[in-house]
Image (tube, rainbow, N blue to C red; front, side):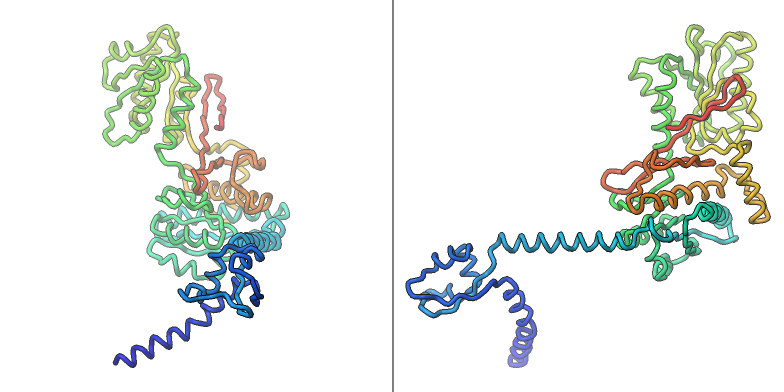
Length: 459
């Protein structure tokens, strides 16, 4: 048994030795035949190496009885500095080769390869919404092709129960320049690794968890969390209403998540020494009236986005204005209110209303009407009555990224002002998230003026 073990060990050494010798030889510059009266120090100095480097290349010199003799042959290694310079040149050459390869495969000089990995089916609401979104993507491709762009589209039905790795095994996936998706958080990790490995841009359009954003520079996340939107809305509020008196109305809605905004707003106002009082939607007329200033303009903020409470608040404001028509009152709301525009439009105008939002659907614009007309023409149906309109969202997203890649190549980072695209509904503006990917930071303020006009401020 011991003899067999020794045989295996010997075989292993014999198998490995060529690689070891090769690695050693790769660091040897030349050989030197020792002449009479030469010393180790002199030979080291002759070749610009240290004594330690010479001995390391010639291990026999470590023997206690070693003597340097005439005609002995020594291996002369490269110095540490020479090896480092060679490694640096090797790395530089690899970078140059990679740059040449990218130049040959410049996305600006060929068709942009787009991949869509979303649930595209008619089984449930997810599939129907994403199918409509995808139709908008196709309409953007059609529009850009008419402008002379070439686009190749590959589509995968990335349903909730699918193994995303099966989708990624398709050779066409690795050739994409841009992938839009996924819809489900459980697919993000595999997709993140995939796009990082193949240098593909990944656009995550909707509200899913994507912690990989913190480390993967190839990810664009469009969705903004409620905390992000609340923080940006507070900043816009403080800029817009510096000398106003703020009234926060508690609407007794236990399901509301708007407290994130109202709590942050109250704290910021307090730190700035600006006036802010809290009243209740159930307060009597006298107590409700006391919350309002007669010397400053008032801004009313509700801590819910629901329609019912908004209607009650407007009724109370109407009663207050009937008694004191000179009171200056402005409403500051939420994107939810855009759903109720048909019902409360006149009140929005009357109370000089501001609504912070990440999108704005206006059915009266020429671009919106043209889009809806083409959608009906292409797909023989109307878009779903949802906000935002998913087909328009898909159009805006695809147009933005495809145009950006076509103009700037892989350096496109979605920053504001890189090209002039007026979105129909969904503006985009990205900022780098630390050393990771890019986050959409767009916020709009929709202003309904007492003159029955609408103003849109983009931040």
